[in-house]
Image 1 (cartoon, helix red, strand yellow):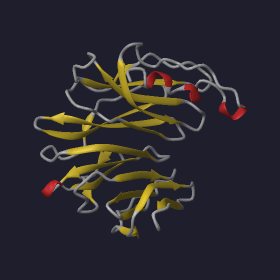
Image 2 (cartoon, helix red, strand yellow):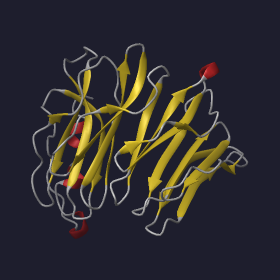
Image 3 (cartoon, rainbow, N blue to C red):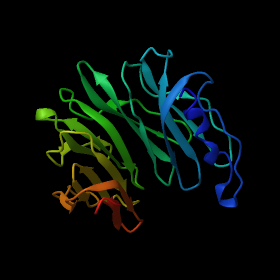
Image 4 (tube, rainbow, N blue to C red):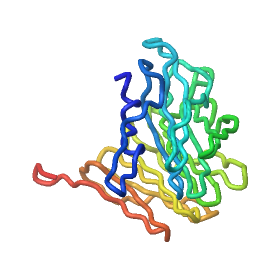
Length: 260
């Protein structure tokens, strides 16, 4: 619905810990098409929201917009992060405890989709977008993570031979992005995935498709491990989390005897 994004921020308008909720706040223009909202928060409660904005209703031309909100304050007016393009963008934002932010999305580059990223912060200061995926291979559905030093990890789905969707990651440390790293041959259909990182930079990436859940781990400043198979039977709703000590937990619902 056109108003989907506009009404999703009830939880951020008041003090949830006190049980007091504010009224909904419009982030994008009323009557405009806006969807695929992603929100991040720093340790002080400052927030960044990003979403897709359609320039003309039904026209199919989208761009990424962002708004920021200081803790206890008001949301800013939207700003444009991307150039317009005729495709869905599916943005993802991550904010670390110090207010640094990264946003990633899929965008067209000639005949293929690429992954674009831009750095910013909770004050609304944004850099220039850059492409981090291969430009001659289709790449979709970006996920982001940011550690306490501002180092970033972005994961996405790279299109391989035979319509395979392969889990792929790139890491930015010291201001430079690594080459894309394909972690698995992937699947011939859509899959679930989740990327997490602790404040020190310990990262885990989980992906799940068919009847298999796999995960790879990357120590701070290191390389990705070979995939570990966590489950090889039917499942639903895989989830991943990590604590400040770098301990990760994966959960899912098992199918058995026709029941979860």
